[in-house]
Length: 161
Image (cartoon, rainbow, N blue to C red):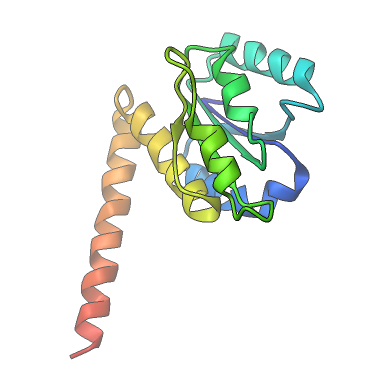
C-alpha cells in the first residue's frame, strides 16, 4: 500500500503534478497517483481516503485549481497530514485556489505549498520529511539530495570565475 497518495482534481493537473511523483520515486517512496474530485466524485474521494488510510497511507497530497476544495475534503475525512497544492486554472491566476486551500477551519488543517510545479515539488519534499521522522532511509535520501543541491550551486558559482 502506498505511503503517500497524490490526488489530483482532474486529468488536466497531471503535467503540473508529475514533478511531485518524480521526486517521490527518486526518494524511493511508495505512492499512488490518481484523480478524484471533491465536487464531481465526492463518494469516490471519501472511499479512496478511507481505503488508503486503512492500508497505511501516511500523507495525502491534494492538487486542485479554482475552487480547490479537494485538500479540504480529504482533510475532513482523515487525521493524516494533508498537503495542498493550489493550481492556477482561472482568470484569477491561482489566487482563488490558493485561498481555497489555505483557508481551512480550525481542527482541519491543510499544509499549503506554492502554486503549480513549484508547489508540486515542495509537496513531495514535505511529505518525505514527514515520513523521515520515522524512516531513516528516507532521511538519508533527503540529506543526499540536499548535498546534490549544494554542489549544484557551488558548481554554478565556480563556472562564473
